[in-house]
Image (cartoon, rainbow, N blue to C red):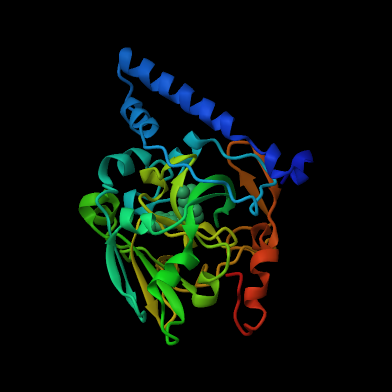
Length: 321
Ligand SMILES: Nc1nc2c(c(=O)[nH]1)N[C@H]1C(S)=C(S)[C@@H](COP(=O)(O)O)O[C@H]1N2
Ligand SMILES: [Mo]
């Protein structure tokens, strides 16, 4: 495989695709959608228009998180997705935009906590200070993106819930309502609802981010509206979308993909490591979406300085599978 290393590998974050580039793209998209509607109606025109009409949601950028590559264009990020609730192909955006109703949206926080609660997603957001973070995203399928998320640290939600000392893991669940996602009913062999989890130590780390927006707008349906997790040092499937439930538990949760592959592929940890291949392909490199480039994958997806210390005491487990 031909590996091209960007000369801009060490580019500072200020040199990554700046905000005005994607803002200009928004104007372009708006124009394109308008033109499509004025002329003969293209099948995607409605989706494109709905997308540009998402409410603005901006927050100050946290400059602690810098990128070594340009941001992935928003339209690509919204139209190339893994969201099995809507089907197993990448093109689920039309279905997600049509079927998923991200508001009103109730969230349950419970289990081994002092403050169990059920609240509307917007009430949860109001309790939090939002920030923007530029994160790399590495899918287990060996492609990657970079996204300007808007959200708050998972740690803040943990503090709100105030777990007891018996809580060892945070278990998260996606909605399982087949009326909001046609793929749930049409693929009954999958173990719905989608479940993921992290240890309490991981949850309290700086990196885990509860995402409620991207590209300066509220989160698009295909990206997991109204609220999803992003764990940038783990393979993408750990970053569960459209969450309805946070459970603080003593037992390690068994996640959706762990259940499906029954230990043959990736398990609970799934930390990115270029030296530990998938049973069927290498993880040494990744395709950077939107650029045509293939670049080396980094240990912990380049976030070893922030999360490497989490795993020093753990032995006898494959932390990278
Ligand atoms: N509920 C749910 N969450 C999910 C998935 C899914 O199918 N369902 N796919 C995961 C995978 S494999 C990836 S790579 C990312 C994709 O996020 P994106 O579409 O915003 O890039 O979401 C993750 N979260
Ligand atoms: Mo993924």
